[in-house]
Length: 167
Image 1 (cartoon, rainbow, N blue to C red):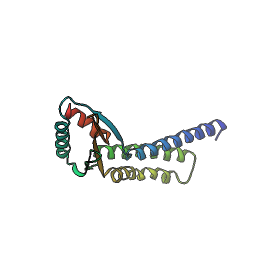
Image 2: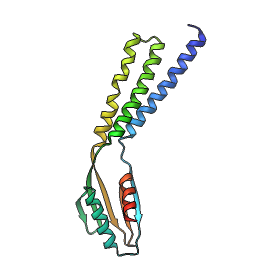
Image 3: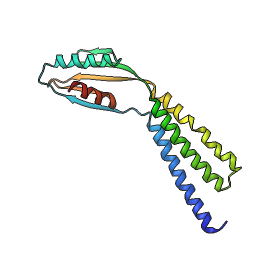
Image 4: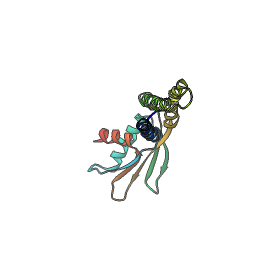
């Protein structure tokens, strides 16, 4: 093997290693809580908006679990199910990434060439990690400010849907 080929293989290995680090962070980030806060103002009475919000959340299988009248706060809790699409997508990404790493390791002559290609068999672990990490209970907290505006804290996707439904 010439020096030029060795340099190419080493740089390819380093780039593939960086790809794997990015892939790991992407898979880990897929289960992260994405909490956001929105503020709603209305010309209607606040009670009417609260009733709309409560009806929407209960239609989406959220249950009222806590009422704090002194803080003027309602807490709803609902079960968030993982996405089949995302689990399959992460598994496919892990398959591609691990296959690339296996091919680079095979070119560098680490072990038997067939053994390193078995790395791609670990890819279903990415989908399993996502599935277990995303299957959880989430809260939506609604609080009414003295200025009669409503602040809602919850998952980003749920808040986007809530805004579309209410407006």
